[in-house]
Image 1 (cartoon, chains in turn purple, green):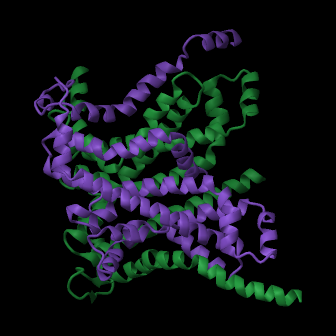
Image 2 (spheres, each protein chain N blue to C red; image 1 turned 90 degrees about the horizontal axis):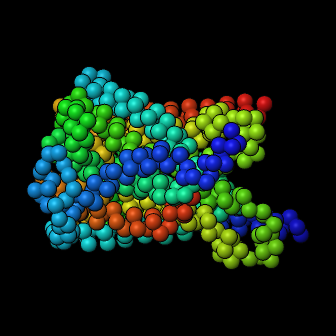
Length: 276
Length: 299
């Protein structure tokens, strides 16, 4: 037994025989997207399907020009970044108050906010649409931002973080009469890097990939996010697979690049949803 | 002295506490609680979102009982959930087990598994539309290679729902594996060493030592996956639009159609309330089971 384990460590691990097919199966759809985005239309109308005959980079310029992907990507970025910033600020403020300040009604309010975590979006979607219409925000970027300015999940996450900090950190400052905001800014903020980056990443991911709400609230092309843009692009180019796959790749590229650069933080952030 | 100071402090606390939570409370109230109550009220209305609404009592709920499409949608959602959740769970666990080792190139394998996590539901749908295309898709190409007949997938009413399961399992396995992998890496090392000393092989160690440690994570993932399965929409919208012949009409897709294609917002709200009740039940059952688990673990 021990003899074989010594031998295994010198040779390539047999686990590669399991992991290579596994990785291929998981990556195949995305690899096929990339290959198709470089094919000609004729390449995609052969059976059985095969590799592109030549590299047709023009699919990307066609997709870029035919769907306003630049506009859609900018819209997605504006909406996602606005949601991230606002969540970081508003969730921090609320979470700090819920964790540290005894104020009237704290328990009830906190439970009510948490309870909304259980409410599926589809339940609030129709009245939310009516609210947006009454606010005159239909078909605008603020309509995508307003309902996601703050999330009960973010408040919960940061409150747990504050509760894990020793209260002694703040006691001296409280006795000195420092304001709550000053304590939050100068004592706690420097410690909040990990939970804030987690919240930022999860908010960005959710907001960037959100579908149902932007689908129903915005219908003009110039205020679509890239996900809705891609869905409408599919409707217009259903038979032109190469251009459609080029558009799909364009729509996924920004997040993929961010993921590659910050894989460690992405993985750690997503893992916290499981540890809760 | 002290009490006066404390009283002033506590008044200040009421004020500063409320000031800090006010923006969040207002926003979550406006976009979370108000619409929830409103939705409930709307479920007793005939409402097309244009002309003035009309109160109809229990009419919408009454109509639900005799709606064959709703019955089909419920059945599809149930079949989908019953297949999607265990397949994703077991798949994620096995994948996480395979990824949990220190060998050369492991980061590339992990990358391949994790990238679908950040791939949007729309992109997933568009890509699988082509992969599963009956005429020119890669899936039928591979089937032909091994001598099997071509399949219809999304265009075949008998297969569309299962194709939906396969596609979404692909989309979710990375997330499950990521959560399981994090949990596996936090299983105490000495536990594994003790098992190895006792002559426990890697496969037995995995199933008998590591997997039981994962129970809380499994409970969380199960609930999370069930809730997401019950809310399936994006992928259906992008691939089959509920077809062919309603074969993939699931509850949320039907709700969407009722609200935004037929403009039956009252009926759609009643469907939403039904969904809400089911999801609250799932959540409460999970909380109950988790608590029972914690208690039996502590005893």
